[in-house]
Image (cartoon, rainbow, N blue to C red; front, top):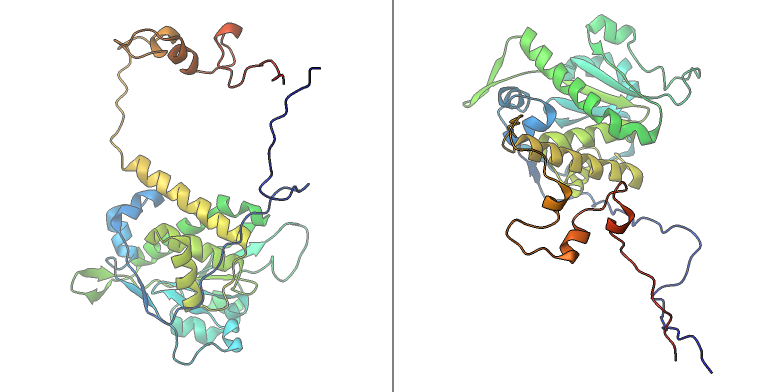
Length: 314
C-alpha cells in the first residue's frame, strides 16, 4: 500500500493567532556619570546647513554635558522648562505665561507642538500660541500642528528647520558675542513646548539631538532624561527616532558620495541578454535565469523560487 510521506517538524514556539508584538525598547536609567556630546560638521549636510551655519548654531561645536543634579529630581520641576542645549529649552506650555522666566532665560523664539486631530475642536492645548506675555516681550511664536502621532516623522524636518532658522535669524539681526578663542557664538534661545513638556515636544527635541549630533537612540534618551527627567517617549515614538536616524544616515551617505556624471548619448542601454551574465563568462542557464525578475518577461524566462515536485512515496 502506498502512503504519502510527511516530513516531521517541531515548532520552536507556541502557535499564536495574532501578529507578533514588537520587542520593547528599554530606556536607560538616569545616569550618575557625566554624559558629553560633541557636534560634527559632517552632520550639516543631512539638514541642508553649510559648515559655517552648523558651527554658528553649535557655537563652534562646543561640547555639551549632561550630569545628574546633586539635589535629585523633584516632581514640581515638571512644571518648569529646562535647558537641553545652550540654545534649546524644553518645557510645558504654562511657561509661556511666565514673564520672569522668559526674560531671565532670554527666550527669542517659542515653538509650540500642538496636537490637532480635530481642527474644529477648540481646546486649550491645540490653541497654544502667542499670548499677551510673548507679545509684550517681542518673542516669535511659530507652532507645529500634529494631526496624528504617526505623522511625527513627516514633521521632523520642519521642526528642526524652525529651530535652526530661529537661531540663524537671531544671530543675523543681533551682534555676536565672544565665547571662546575659536570663534563667535550667538545668544539665541529656542523654547519647545507642548501640553506637559514631556511627550510630543520631547520627541521633537529628541529628533533634533539625533540630527545635530548623530546620537544613537540610547544616548539620546539618556541625555534627554538627564536634562529633563520627566521626558517620556513610548515605544512607537522611540521607533520614530530609529527610523529618523536611518533616514539621516542615508542622507549623509548620499550627499557625501561622489556626484554621478550623466553622459547622455554614450553607450546604448544593455539588453537583457547582456545583463544575464558577465562579459567573458560562459553562458550559463542558472545565471541567465536569476539575473532579473520582471513581470513583463516572457513566461519561460521568469525566475521561479519554487517548483512543483512529486510527493515523496514510502
